[in-house]
Length: 591
Ligand code: ADP
Ligand code: MG
View (cartoon, rainbow, N blue to C red):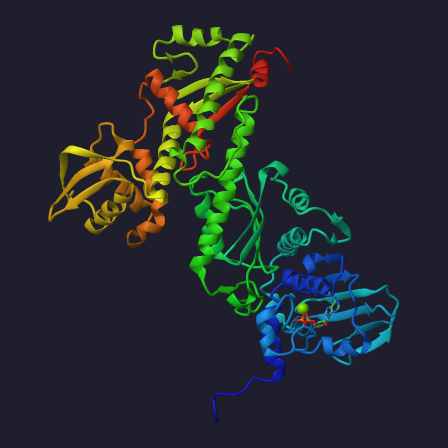
């Protein structure tokens, strides 16, 4: 007897059904997408016992005509795709004609539907005799699914508790509701209405459905480069979380797209600590011919023909949007009452060298300091005296006209009605990082020749290929060396790190840090942001360094010119603020 037998059509049907109809949430997804494909603008999802006992999706879409009703539940019967060529230009959600047939193979299915001409029908016992009878209904379709997996008991075992299934459905509804914010949506769980959503703007929907977010935490993004259109929202770095909501849609379809998540993560890498991630609500429109949506049975993944291009486009779009936002926010908060007409512009790579750009910035800083003096002089509470107190009581405080250094670590200053506390190391790190970055991108490297070249023996305890890759990369910022068998001879160093430095130690430290971050040294060019972040860190003012007044002045002026003066390149905050109101509360002047 032959061992290999063909499975019966019925078994094949059930296996396929299991792939499409994995759990209640996947059914809801298919049904809501059918409603959207049918141009509905009101959709109600109603479930009982996590959708396992009962699940209903009702819409006001175009309905299904009587003559199509039986075909609708046939496997591979669809009104949306006619030829294989159409596969490349899919803009509807469904196209494989699998959902209703698969649901019908797994559960008991009932459809009540009415078209524009008023003809209404009910299809029930769909799997056996497929009865159709006239019914009463306004235009639209209601699909009811009962006793999920009654027909496939093996599958039922994999179902989680009703509570978990409900959470899955709820997350799906959130995701669909944010994407289709212009559609009225109701979600009813065990006869209780959980969401009742009227048409709204996308940001309103996000704020309504994601309770941890406020409108001001959302940063809108809009870009179109190389035929890739990106729109939607990213979030302010301050609200980043370990596991935030991240919705990505490609040509309208919600997908898992690791390449996009990775690009966004990179864009945030100098703004948030590595263990945190940003909220994302991004829609990408890409030429359908350059992606394949037909690689996953539930269409949850897509394949891109050019991943590295996509990565770059997303990285740049998010990075530019974030920097612009941070710059604008900073200007608004801290220089609002400045007389300067400074308006943030995208600095050109050599911006800091152009008078037209740097002049208004310097002006801002000067106005800013002048404003401080006035503020301090007129202030009852944050006056000069309060700081003098600190200075005279504590010998280590370093005071100049505008700024105060405390604990040899923080710089205090007032601005308007706020006390600002600045972390000197983080601030200098940011300044150096941005300067290195500008010099690197513009190729305008400021380096200083060494009268006495520095010779170091290749340290024995480091990976030599890594070290050589690093030294080669560092040439891009002015650290040039010739390498012989066991020695490296440096003849130029970046002007930015002119202070006394043990170059050997610096290299070893940078190397160790990059190795810990598991950076691919053969691709060091691609991770140059990390190289210079680390270089900036190791060549910056440290906590504990006593600073001369001129040095503090320069640091603050430079900081205010940064694109992102809020966070150091490793994502730690630079500035923290205590408002006058908070102080007055502490001293019980106000409640
Ligand atoms: P697909 O969506 O891939 O075409 P489905 O099995 O989900 O396959 O649906 C089969 C067909 O039934 C659809 O092509 C559509 O013509 C019709 N249909 C399903 N749901 C609805 C609905 N809510 N409103 C109108 N027509 C629908
Ligand atoms: Mg469908």
